[in-house]
Image 1 (tube, each protein chain N blue to C red):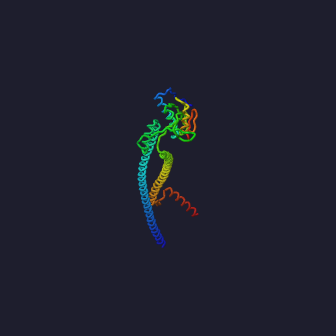
Image 2 (image 1 turned 120 degrees about the horizontal axis):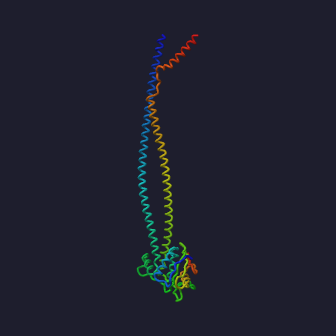
Length: 256
Length: 99
């Protein structure tokens, strides 16, 4: 009877061991599959990120090409402005050279063809302090020579002076705008640099985390595939001797 | 007064041209309208047999004031010319145009 019970217990123990072995094995397999799927998904996501980065880099290159084009255009326009300023200074200096009345009259008519082709007339007048009027000069008076043109034509000079003053103010304002834009661009460049540095830091962190996760996951899968085992077998002879001695001693003590 | 170039009188045509260049460097520094009024004064002093020449110096940049000294001719014509051209003020060595 005792033998039967012992045999039954052994069979139950073996069945339990087998069933738990198969249960644990199937559970491990599921975990391995789950880990492999997660790894594959992460690889896929990483590829998507790399594709997106490549697309951003392509767009960035396009924008940089546009910037180069606009910068070249801006430099060209600046050269035009500088050239116009040089021309203005040259014309102003040439005007300072004009002194003879005929030269001045010719330049005046070139500038204002509305005055006609006929030579501009001149007249000598003297200012009378008593009557506060201009009139003909007596021999002792200090006469001044004037060009003769219609009274209303003076508005042309006034208009030109006003325009010149206004344009000078516009020019000054535009130069300030340009200076502000330059400053703005410098700040934008600094922001871009900081953004790139931040992106690089994130990228490095991501790469490191990805590699570590990949390594850890690989180790995890390896462990799942070959779990640590408990080795069954005979103990070493030293252990046998020690336990034998202890058992003998214990038996002697109990026998007493 | 700064050290100014000296001219032998009577002025030769070359000296007159040289003096004009020197004066041009002064009146062209001034406010454009003021500079042209000074240029008018130079013109009036020379023409019509007046034959008077002055040398400009110390023009105020973009300003209305310039200094002068007589090189040749009748110094009494200078206040007359300045008055006729309605300058703001004039002394023996300074001219000021209205602003």
